[in-house]
Amino acid sequence: MSNWDVIPSDSEIESTIKAVKARGINVILVKNKFEALDALKKFIPAGSEVMNGSSTTLNEIGFGELLKSGNHKWKNLHAEILKETNPDKQADLRRKSACSEYFLGSVNAISKNGELVACDASGSRVTAYPGAAKNVILIAGVQKITDSLESAMKRIREYVFPLEDARAMKAYGMHSNTSKWVIIEREFNPKRMTLILVKEKLGF
Image 1 (cartoon, helix red, strand yellow):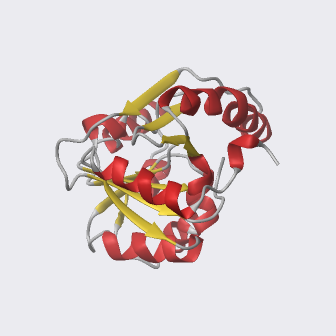
Image 2 (cartoon, helix red, strand yellow; image 1 turned 45 degrees about the vertical axis):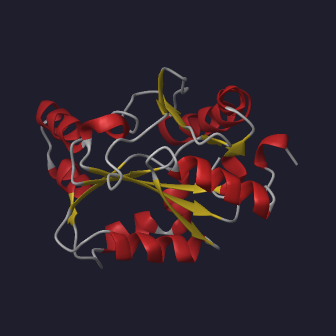
C-alpha cells in the first residue's frame, strides 16, 4: 500500500474538516460513494447549468453515468459541447462552461491545514475552481488528506501524476503533465464552494 492512499483516523478527518471549514469552504462528510452521489443530487437545484471536469472520482461515484442517462433535471453543458461539430465553436463553449452555475470536479490533495490542491495538464478543471464558476462542488476520498501543503504537492508529483499519465496514455494516446496548478487557500463566499468528503478511497 502506498503512503499516499492511507485512510486517516477519524480524529484526523474531523480536524481536517474543521481546517477546511475555517477557510470558508463548506464540507459534507459521507460514508461511501453511494452517499456521495445522493448528496450531489440533493445539492444541485433542478434547472441548473452543470459542467464537470475530467475526474476519476466522479466516474467512480456514478456521476458520469447519471449525466449520460438524462435521468436528472439539470442542464447538461457537457452534452451541449459534444453536440457542436465546429472545433472552434466547441472550444469556445468549453471555455465558457468554466463559468457554469455548478462546476463539479475533484482535488488531488487536501492538507490537514485546510488547503485544497488540484492540478491538470490543460487547465480544463482548475480554471473553474478559483472564481469562474458560480458554484463549485468537489468530491474527494479521505485518502487524499496529507500532513501539509508541501506534502500535498509532493503527493501529486510522486503518486497522482504517474497514475494520471498512464490513464491519459490509455485514453488519449498521449502523456499528461503537471502544467496547471491551483491552491484553494480561502473562499470568501461561504456558499460558493463545497467539498463532499468521502470516507473511503476514491480516485487518485
